[in-house]
Each structure stands twice: as structure tokens, then as C-alpha cells.
Amino acid sequence: MKLIYLLIGIFLLQSCGKKELNEDEILEIIHSNESYENMNLKKDFLTGNEFIDSTTAFRKILNQENFKPIYEADFNNDGKKDYLLNLADPRVLDNNNVVKPHISEHNYNSALLISGNKSYRLLNLGKGRIYEVIASKIIQFNNQPLIKLISYHQGFDNSFHLFDIDTLMIKNNELMEYYSDSKKHTVEKIIFTKNEHFPPVRLYQLTLTKDSLILHSYHYKNLKGNFSGDGYYSFEKMVNGLNQVNFIKINERYPFSNDDFSESTEIIFDNGKSKKIYDYNGKRYLFLMNFYEKLDTLMSKQKWTEIKHSSIRNNR
Image (cartoon, rainbow, N blue to C red; front, side, top):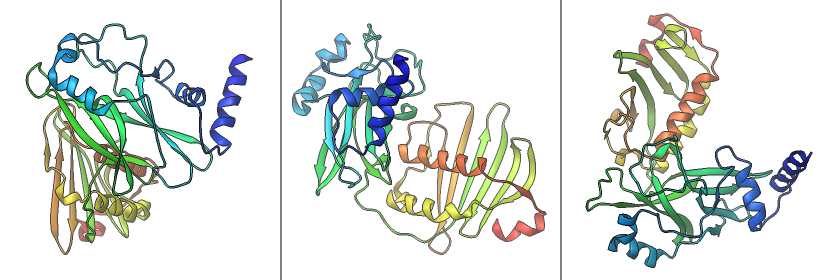
């Protein structure tokens, strides 16, 4: 019965349209999310690693940034406060090995509670361990709230380059890397290919335009051959997202980090120009991870119709 009352309280809290939350209410929402049940607000920003904590570089970061457990801003301009949180798991007693095996798919040290029409939604800054987050804070740039993120350098080896500093922003209620110079390009086609490495095999190729969605399937689910879908209505949204991050400046290659699969994206734009991105699941961008997830969702919702090869020649 106690659990029922707690869940009802969380529902009312998330749906009542409050413009401001107190600390207890914030923690109730945090604890209602999977994998955050034991997280507390972070009060001590030392890592517990004697080497890291003793370095001049880390001491300088702590003195300069003066991190807090909670930061507030209105990221989506809806008149409600959003909350950037630095978190710690009290069950982790031994932090003295930074390069410990990753026992979780994500890093949970920072989260953003973003307000919506009916509830708050939790966004994880450490999603997919693209960033091994230490702490984060809100900064202002050109009257826009941004997130300054301090994380362990991916190649951490107790040497010179210990930390990375990145800047994130909110666009369409999603976390992504900050880009100051978005460019509007006319995107004509997006071609996405996914390959498996062991054994080496192409899984599928997806071609998306403003008026067509074509799947060349080799091993996507139980489909083999060429298929059409009706999800091309998502094309403009995807193009807008690509332009917001100025996709032509995204790195063309991301090194091996996972031997299981690789992904490549080719964007045809501005009368036949081509931008290719080869991703071997290395350190990439939150934007790219979100982009792949949107494609996966788009594909999973389709009722694929098999078509003849001659019908799709013009889409290749």
C-alpha cells in the first residue's frame, strides 16, 4: 500500500504542471526511473581515486567550476524550471579504480529533468557512455542555457590527458552537442547501412527521401529482398536535425570500440554533394546515437511491402 501511495504521489507530481520542484520532489522523480532508484544528489565532487584527486588539473577544475548538486534553467522556454543534477550512487564504495570494467551500458552521474506538458522527462548525459561523466553545470551563452560537461578522457591511462570538456544543448527536448553555426542544406537522400562483423555480413541498407522509404534487407529480422515503407514523413524532421548540428562538420570516421557491428550514413545534399559517416561504435556524438535510435524506431513501425528490383532503381 505504501508503494501505491508513493507511485500516486509521483504521478501527481509529474503531471500537475508545477513550475518549480523542491529537492524531495526532484529525488522522487529521479528514483522513479529505472537504474536511478539508489542515486543521491552529489555533495562531494572528489572522485575517491587518490591519483585523480591529487592532480593539479583536477584540483583546478574543482576550484574553477565550483560544482553544485542542482542547477536550474528553462531549456525549452515553457515557463517551467528544468533541473540539471549531479548524482552519486552510495552503493559504490570503492572508486579508486577509474578504469574499472564497465558493468553498465550507461554512465549515470548526471541527468537532466526536462519539463513537458504533463510530466518531467529524464535525459541521461552519460547515455551509451559516450561521455564518462564526472560532473556538469549550466552555463549561459548568448542568453541561451547550455551544459558544460566534465568527463574522463576516453583513452584514460593515468598520463597527461585526463579530462575532456564538452558543451551540450537542448534541441527539440533532446540532448545533443552544441553547435554555434547551424547551416541549412537541401538534403535529397539519406542512406543508412548496418553491417555485422562476425561473421562479416551486411544486415540491411535503408534509403530515405522526402517521398520514399526503401529497405534493402539481407538479414533484417526475417526479411530478405527489397521492401518499401511509408515512414518517409519523418524525412523532414531528420533533415532539420542534421542541419541543426551542421552535419558536414561531423567527423567522417569513428574508430573501433565494438567488434560486433558497424554503421555508415551517406547524406546526399545540395545537388549531389555527399557526406559519409563511418561509425564503428567508437566515441561519437549523442546526436548520432539519437539519430540511429530514430531510424531504428522508424523501421520497427513499418509494415514493409515487398517490391520488385526494377521499381527501386531510381532510388539508389
